[in-house]
Image (tube, rainbow, N blue to C red; front, top):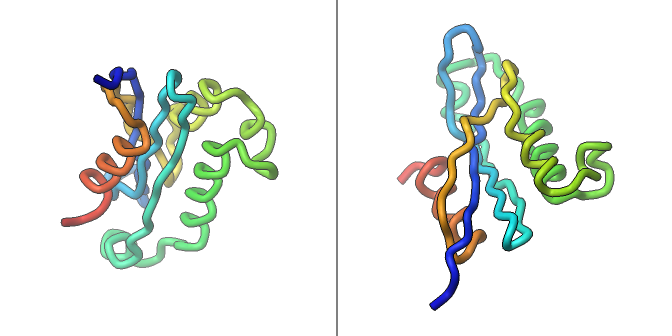
Length: 129
């Protein structure tokens, strides 16, 4: 039987009008220390975002979300945050912020396969059925 590992995740949200607190889930960040796993998956549904904010800058949203993905992966060109260790990158990515791109609170769980769990959460929380 494969061992269960503690993981943490947060949902990426786009909040076009912070003062109205309306948001659309656009991605998931998942971190599992034991599996040395930190990944971000995201999808921008332009039609849904335009429905709650016709003037939203989709290119800027895409650039911000791509930065989350690059920092998660620790890629070159992701700045000083991208060079930190995985736990520090996850904490920075999930820090509370009042910007257009935000994360939910961090939620824990157990998983045998962090990649599979990330894909499941992404399907359930981001993509529409």
